[in-house]
Image (cartoon, rainbow, N blue to C red; front, side, top):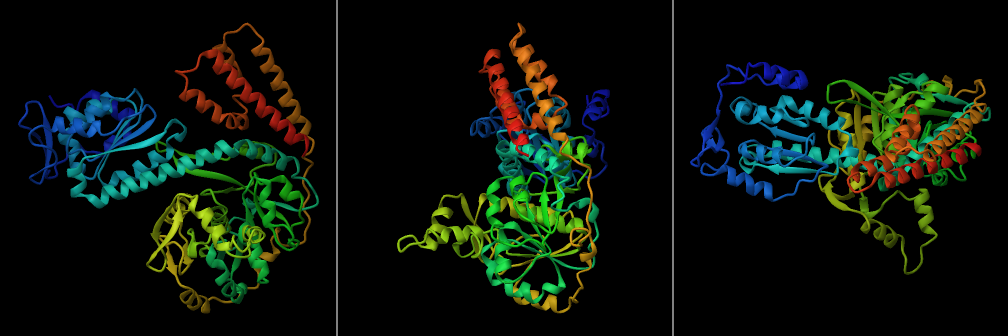
Amino acid sequence: MSLKNSSEVENLYSRKPYLRLYNLESNLINQTFLKEAKNSDEFFLEWNGKALASVVSPKKQAERLYNEKKIKDHHLVIVLGCGNPHILNIIDSNMRDGQIFLIIDKNIEIVSPLWDKFLFPLLQNAGRHLFAGDNSLSLLYNYLESLPIERLTGVLFFRNQNDIQLHKEFYVQIEERISKLFSSKMSDLLTKFEFERIWVKNTIVSILRYSDSLTKRIPIKELENKITDIPGILVSAGPSLRSQCEFIKRNRDKIFLLSCDTSLKVLLKFGIIPDGVMTLDAQTHSYFHFMGEDFTEIPLFADMVVSPQLIRSMKYKSIVHSQTAKFQIDASGKPIREITAGGDLVNEYIGDQGDIQSGGSVATSAFDVLRFLGIKQIFLVGQDLAYTGREIHSTGTHHNEKWLTLVSRKNTLERINEVIIRKRKTKMIPSANGKEVLTDYVLDIYRNWFEESILNVNIDVKNISSNGAEIRNMQNISMESAEEVFRNIPIHNYPWKSLDPWNNKKREFSDTMYLKKLFIDDLIELEYEIQKLITSDLESEKVIELIQSTIKNKSYLKAMLRKTEIYLQRHKNNLDKTREKELFVSSIKREIKFLKKGISTA
């Protein structure tokens, strides 16, 4: 009996509404059929007369495919192609409840013939999802974006080769995009592990010093769409920058010029004063990109997590504050906003500063700043995203200046670059000149961010590069072509000079230093509550539960404990409750001490 119109199917649709996309009663001519194999009770799919699995023993074939790999509890498992449907049952039966298992097929016609016997029973289980046909790809990528990466350790692909051969380009592109997406999300998670505690501390200190009258502070949200009809140049510190500075200088009066912190020294050496400089790094060593330079006429575009020492050690024209946020669609199709740890405190105490999206680098954040300002034509300069000429940065950067002090007869600058490059995970990718160029894992993540982001904005973006990495979805043009484009761009009169970041008007803010005592007292009270719990007679499990309840409304502290909580979750079967409590309490005490020390020096 067919289940296609049953109440059970309606119940499944209520839990996974996207499945209604697949019309099980379609009147379209179907070229895909479920066929019986020679072995009894075994099946394979046939498309347009071609068998997509063994016609004798597809179950044995599926078992061999399954045995090639080992599924772990925290793997994201993906099947590419359903020509051999037995692989679906075998994988499903060997996965834990709730583990994520995705079925992807180019052909939407596979749904109807596989529904009763294979797909419906499998999709009843939590974590199992089907994406069939080209129209399902946007749902697939939205779903993957929304997955909590901290619960995953890797992606495992099972490929039905007959399907792959039929639509090779489709499956190769999907696997490549999923792998890049997972790598990017894993990179984000590792960054959070390392820096979230610093982000929270820096954000609190930035809040406390927001009313500092020495430097004018402006939320970037006040500048949204304030600069239009003028093109912008985003300057990065790739090896090609030094050959492009004369071009920038010739066209300086035609564009809004935003520099990354790493490229600033190079521009200043050529006598080019940018309209702003973007910095993102929470660590103090970013100071070296600014050391020895004059910024009294240059606004600093700074995330709230930027090192407070950097901000208070220099005199800037102004500081334009922003918060890093990521916007995505969750598994249910609902839009969500993920803000950097500590961002909730900013909204609570000094108000929304404005959201800037980032791909993890200063250049990606600076690109979104230009978009936020309203600039509709953006030129990328020095955005090599590769080791052009086997160099890491342009000459004139802080990195290059530091390496020059190490140069000797036996230790040349070329050797210093080469030693660093060889320590990294490198590969060859297409270059902007049609050849190939060397890049690494991290630079390629940034390249992928640009390629994906361009698809979501209505902006004309051109990458001025002859030897760096090719960035898809935008024009990659030579310097000569760029000169032709700029001949038709008129000179502007710096209309943004009347806006707050560039004018000489003063701004008054209510005092925020009073919050210092509030934060310290709150942390002391929390320490007291935790000490009471751990010295009580309660069971270890109950102590952990009560501590988690105590910090539930302190999102900034929960973010600082993320690494510990993930460790405990992944090792819960190997740790007794007493040891789990010791690790959790030790971690929270360490983070409270870290915050108190940082706040007390604000």
